[in-house]
Length: 222
Image (cartoon, rainbow, N blue to C red; front, side, top):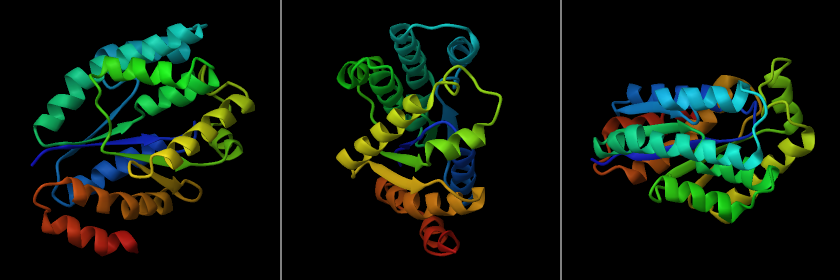
């Protein structure tokens, strides 16, 4: 069985980290092998880059894009590809679509330029499926609260541009993207994610485990 690469995208406060963890727990619970990771910060190098990007003071837009790409290159080479080769499902909190939305659009660096940079850094690796947790900018800001990092503290127009680019990308690639409304309780959103993602995972796996079939058709729909 080969692995699968599932990414989660969404604006700040959309609940990606929480829902990545919930999906990984569910996948392991139904007999599959899954791991969670994140960008930036999925490696020791990535954690240092994350600190620079989010809490290290001023970073110019192009330097920001390059730092994200450096983290991504190392993350894919040392974490994601080895796991996929071992047949593991990797569920990642952010991937290259984040850079397209945040740096390509909100920072106005150009979507094609930023996307091409990430594709070069990762040798063209694309997710098998991408979950967009869609929530309004006002709801996301309320969830983040008063303590904000350098990106979270950007203005409403910045975050609205990010959200609209995510929605545009999802509309342009419906075979890859899965849009999940992220309003409501953590459990309610987790159930929506499972209902939407488990059929896609069954399509990706070679030799579908019976436990996946029963899990997605049974308790996932409750």
